[in-house]
Length: 261
Image (cartoon, rainbow, N blue to C red; front, side, top):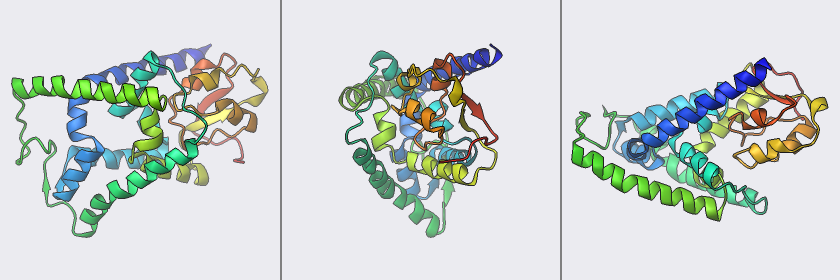
């Protein structure tokens, strides 16, 4: 019973964070998006988007892709759409479609790598591209314009992608930043030093498949439980499968208990 309360508490906190990210979406689109990171890199400007990227990548070696479930504004938007328009990703062609993500990653990461190789960043402007000197210049008109412009565009994109491909399709197929999180996740799962991951108690499973229905990434969680292998790099460690299971089959852990298969 105590574990159930803890998991439910985490999910409540996670949902609050999701809604806060939605409120901050205009800011996130301008400064934290992959495009903003590329533009600041090409101009050799260290921005808040690049700092977030570095923190995210480092965190993936200890908490996997947890960032995708609580630290990504675009993931938050997709989670809202999943609540309103639940649709699992089609299993057909999913592996082929995910290749797009790595193609986007190569194209997206090249300017960042080129900047690092050529001597690094020459200036700091955390709020780039808002102002050349890094000062904050938000007036009521620009803020209102952001709200009127970016919210409808973002909502339209989230709706279209959800209807066409399914929930969290941006994470699965189009987000180049995910590749970095997958690198960190695969490394920690391979080396197996203490880090956040999922463990399974297969003997308690009754085959209800509620974990499958709850997974926002459309993973075949039930099959992972049967195989006693929860170490999928596509997992964002959101805990939805833990909360959905009444038998406490799946749990968070730092210490590795099972041998990987």
